[in-house]
Amino acid sequence: MEILITGGAGFIGGHLAAGFLRDGHSVCVVDIMDPFYDLQLKRRTIQHHRNVAAQHDGEYTYLNGDIRDEDIISDLVSDADAVYHQAGKAGVRPSVDNPTLYADININGTLTLLEASRNTELDAFVFASSSSVYGGRSEYLPFAETDPALPVSPYGVSKLAAERYVCAYHDVYEIPTVALRYFTVYGPRMRPNMAISNFVSRCFTGKSPIIYGDGTQTRDFTYIEDVIDANRTLLDSDAANGKAVNIGSTDRIDIKTLATEIRDQIDPNLSLQYGDRYAADAAHTHADTSRAASLLGYDPVYSIREGVSAFIEWYQSNRDWYEPLVID
Image: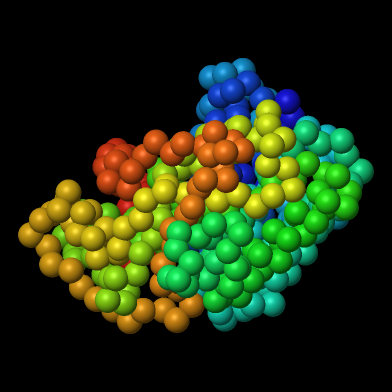
């Protein structure tokens, strides 16, 4: 199968590309190489793809391109059997400073892909949405897809708008679209400016992990392998077409406990530090994954503690190049 992955040099897209290459599919990655974090990480991901393709006799193509470029996207989608749309402008906090840019990339870029898909017989169009669409109001925990979507950041608003277009294009144009609402995905080669990577890096370098806020805010952290399994299922299943589906761990942890768990695994002698909480950060996230279980047979394997241990092990093995990338 010919699979197009936008944002395929990024974290989730990069793992998807490697997984599909191992499964014997042909993969085309398009990525604009946005320097939101050090591009060495994306370059390593692309080289990893090439190594995997060589090992599995797979066909791999990488293209530096913008998802808003109608000519590029039209050509790429026309050659694809499935589209995994992982590209987008990431970051809740930075979206506060430039909401227009987030709307342009996340909404208009998605529309460019959807329009190209109207002229192609696709088997699947999978969109990477976000738990940020819920906004984090505790009275709705755990969040179900039928709960109100009340994003509190421009990033969350842009993902919700794009998601609604994705579902509408299924209803109106019969494109086999699905929107997966990811809940704080983490794992090897994750973005170096995430809480887990920062906590791990600081502990390994003898620095106290910094918690922004009082640490009572909670997150449903989802390990990357569980996310990849959900995406892989959609190549062969149309049960979720036209729907938004939560992909989480079914578990959650408060940030203070998370920092303590990481600290205790690496250097129990360190203390915890606290900083000011960011206003755009959601107070809580927690996924109700019953729809994913019912439609996709989704059954996440990794608990937060198992996933953190796996990430720490990977970090130790790749510390020489990854640690300098982590934003302190």
